[in-house]
Image 1 (tube, one colour):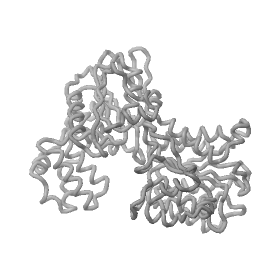
Image 2: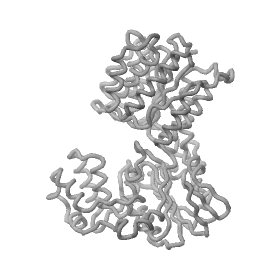
Image 3: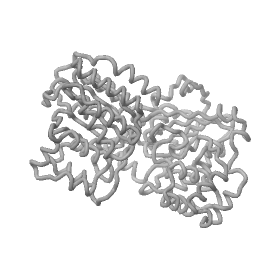
Image 4: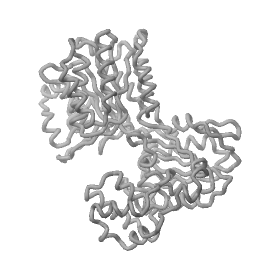
Length: 525
């Protein structure tokens, strides 16, 4: 992530190209925002990221600077919502050396991809890779358990001359359930449900999940010993922590039973545990770690590479923005926190960047105060504010402030929507008010193409949203109280503001775009 940000710091300080085609000049800012979002999604398509990461020359495979010799010794496993497209491209590149493979994917994903025109992501009829569907409603089930057992079987049968190619994407944890015997799947789920209900953090939940699993927390890599393991990861987690994505099946988990007991005791669950869980946690060591297997040997045997992430999506978005005559700058790929706070931040940044005179000092103070709430570092906010003012003062056209991450919504109603649509609605209201920023455009979209239980990825809005809604008899506050942003945007101007790319086949969280013209009189066209 640091590499992506530093790359953008150098890119964002140059003037955008001043020459572009007539077609681009005629595009509205809303149309340009949608083009930039599409480029972000395209940059992290499963086939694209796999093709970038696997460099083959004859029988030599190069991955992230590491070389592997292919001798019909490649075995492939995968789990996650995006691994179908990853596996299809991997087989295209390496198919003549693949011995066998199994991937665990969500129920209905093959039909859904076919219906959305993504047939190229599906495996061919003669593929050596078996596709197993499971985890209905994104919950571990018996079908996902059978797929995990098949994956574990492949891993345990490998030899020192074999290579295990592991494809991992978001949703992989639910698709790889493999409790340590004698724990049943139901018992493990009950323990994690109780922990979540007691208020355990995601880190605490993962500590317990990994301790009770044969494959998570480095278990898959351990099962594959002594074969070489190459894991290609499409990250859907802020910061791309390899131990958290799909619960880190190829990343060593060093916590002992005592640390797991501490978590359980903290939430007073130690007395209500099933006997099977107590038996497993009573073991001296949950699985051999680096010390037993030889740290240097273990680290040289396993290669983990993040090949797709929110930061990489923003790189692609930035290139497209520049081609469209915009001046791109990345705020952060790690935006989180409540959508109310995130919307407030974007509203303040928009007013700060569009102010016709030097903005009041309290605006900058408010922006910096919001940083910790939304996961954005102070130095990123300082940099963004400086560049926004430089762009305005020197008349650099339209600045495209880009960010990503995964904010949260407080559910208080029963309506339909998702975090992207609610964020777009709230930012639209922030851009309105007594002095509306009519020409400032904001887009929020999920890179998977689905925002909550809707067919929209998100929405596009601007400072004229409130007036537009009022003229059509829509009260935005009532829709927000019911978490009904999808209904709001569907009824507003016949749904033209909804972002509807369809199922994309990938997922690296959300993309936020704030397009700021240097003058409030910039024509919307």
